[in-house]
Image (cartoon, rainbow, N blue to C red):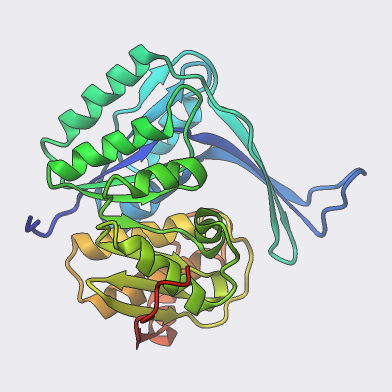
Length: 324
């Protein structure tokens, strides 16, 4: 299906969180740690993607499940970044996740369980989702699943959107990723660790990541993007591999860098950028993200500077897939 240039996109965050982020020199387990500075804000992978897309100029609608007990920071954020709120509010409180960022750039995540979603909540969400599908072609489904939503249900939503000709960018892990891969999302973006977990063996080189991604592409996924941190990004599309390498960055925090990459990939496709320009842009946007605390496009000038320093090259496909 040929989809025209657009600014309209839906981001789906099934299990959002209030992120309590603290920066400290070094985390010492089993003892008292003093935090130098902290922030408490509405987040979740799809919410982060929405913020970056809004900064880029997209017309964003956000949906998912939100606890009725503590929605205020989410409502404030959605108002501040000027996105349309179509979240389904459910009983209970949205979870709080703790992120401890060390001076080295290392991040320790302590993720708490979220709300429990009922069958009636799921029915309300499905009505919302497929109503939005009547007026939108791009959907970003990112993050983990709340209690009450199975990996198979999530995969079913992806499959239904795919059958309607929608472009679903899917960024999750573990059981959700495994089930989602079988439902023909238009794009997936595992990092090297998530890809290793999926195939059940270490993928400690770019070639091994390529090998795994090519095997997955045989399931009919049009775009497979593998993020490898400071080693850059690889993108498989229509049998062609591209690899990007950003300049060395002063890492402040890696929180949200993957979400920023997804937002850049989505925006680049929505704007129908040429493939090499698109990958360079998305990679540079993600590189900018690690140099700051929090997500969002903080400096257009800095982004353009990083783009100029980001290298994009073609890679040869791996020819022997039998050994995976």
